[in-house]
Amino acid sequence: MKPAKQAAGAAASGGDKYDIRPEQSVELLKELHILTRDGKLNQDSRRKLKQVYHLFNFIEPLLKDVQADHPDVSLVDHGAGKSYLGFILYDLFFKANAPQGTIYGIETRQELVERSTALAARCDFPGMRFLNLSVADSITSNALPAQIDIVTALHACNTATDDAIRFALEKKARHIVLVPCCQAEVASVLRKNKQQALKSPLAEIWRHPIHTREFGSQITNVLRCLQLEAHGYHVTVTELVGWEHSMKNELIVACYKNLPRKKPAERLNAVLAELGLEEMHERFYTA
Image 1: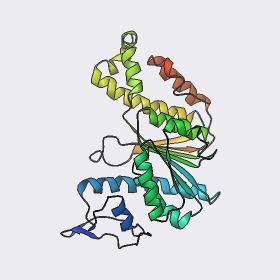
Image 2 (image 1 turned 45 degrees about the horizontal axis):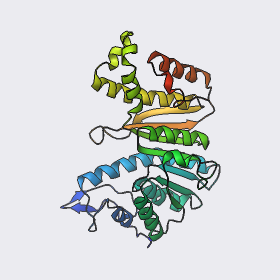
Image 3 (image 1 turned 180 degrees about the horizontal axis):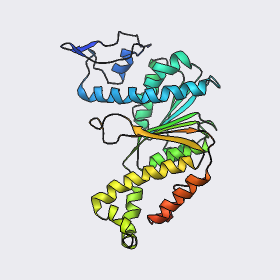
Image 4 (image 1 turned 90 degrees about the horizontal axis):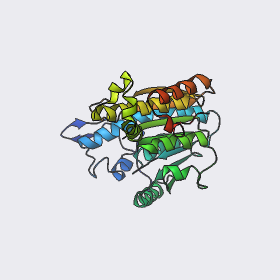
């Protein structure tokens, strides 16, 4: 089944308009259950589509950057879930602009891998592959090539985002796009070492449990950015969409530029030492 194109901006109901890109397959959106069978869009689906489109705006220039070097662009999407991002990327970009390219969806739930594989076949998307792997296991899996151009991890929970970073570093990815989620590991170490840390006035920042959780989440992403910089990447951090749509809203985009590594590595190690997180050197390893 090849999804037919339909006009963008179709009325969902009662004249209510929604923005669908002109080149987007409406039939694909129905298959993904973003649209109902009669073409309607509920509020949750509208929010989901807005997030994926906004993320596409960030990823498209990265795809074109890679494509300028070689046509067989490769992208790995970690924690793919139902693969909304992968399917929309393939439909909007790969199908017309990079038919030799490949998108790999990494997902631990076998039923979602099977569902996505079947949908890719029905849509005639030959460059989509789905693998039943954890992010950590994907690093050493022979099912993936030795080098990957772009790595994405959208709402990969807790340390799965760090595994995605490790994967990207191992695969020498040119671009990395992350929307971190549910960071708990650093907060647990802060909590464990709280009594020792309270000797420093700075520990007041995370003395109360709710602050421990919030500060742990914040500092996790700070350490991730420093780690990427310490491997030669240029890093930008911004919002994915407005906070009214999602509280897990931080978007980290890293592009390899072979930048100097010494200063960010020193700063990362200094932050770990200052906050009593020295045991996390292996997690946030530098070049």
